[in-house]
Image (cartoon, rainbow, N blue to C red; front, side):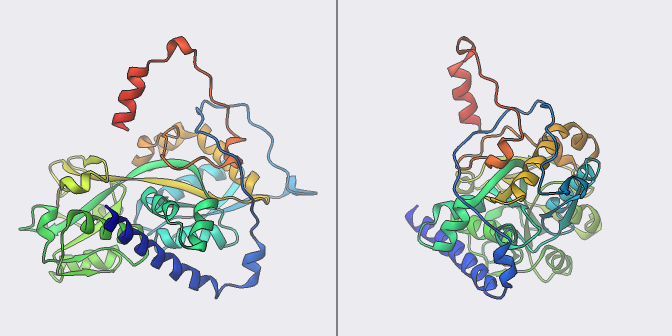
Length: 366
């Protein structure tokens, strides 16, 4: 385990140092757009609709200005982007113009939320956040870990391993050519970890994006591709059919399942996939930076609207909204205090109604 932790540390440091180098090329205006200080702890509340407070005031005459915010997501064919478009539509109905930006992956998202003006929120994988939080040897990482805060936990991303015929398990990727996502993406980092944990050694890992990977897979240039994305993924809905003779590969390696919870991609999620496929899931998280500027109120108001309109999102948005539990306890991460102040306080429970057996079972199944 020490070797694995060192490997994860090196991987994250390398990615974040690359991110730091990019920072040197940004204008000084970016640095002036951010502020920050530490804040207290708190938990995840219950989300029955509260009485709505008035819109936050950001200065003289601000009540007449439209609120604009940015959200950085992911590949335009991925789930992050589709969730972002749903939020854009919802926020427009409530007086917030949400600019949804695609990105190259989680590392860019963390950096954009940390440094880029106009983008106070992003979507990332929870395993990336956990790695960043554990690395205490790099000053930039320590700053990002301390001040990147959770707005809400979102849905699970499923690990999709799509391969040509003849490959039937994750272990069969030994000695094969596998596409693992753009360098710096969540797919890239998770793929590297999966191979390390499972002790599987492909002949070659190709750091290319999902569109290029699928094209090469269909063309016979590679044996498999990994894509960490919420099902159903638009890429596989629109870009694959039965004539391509591709298949989803189960991820049931016992060592992998010690790190990630097992879930399944249901039968017929894709037209070319007739049976349920077991795999592992990775929680996605809506995050913000610990601002001490007007963005604090904007993010809080955004969170309030989202919490009050989950039914609308489940009925009108991506199928993944049906799996979102805003009360999910994401270990190691506290909710942003700018969000908590816009949400109802948790209801206290009558001590006589507490069932410690039920609580223990919930913890085991979490």
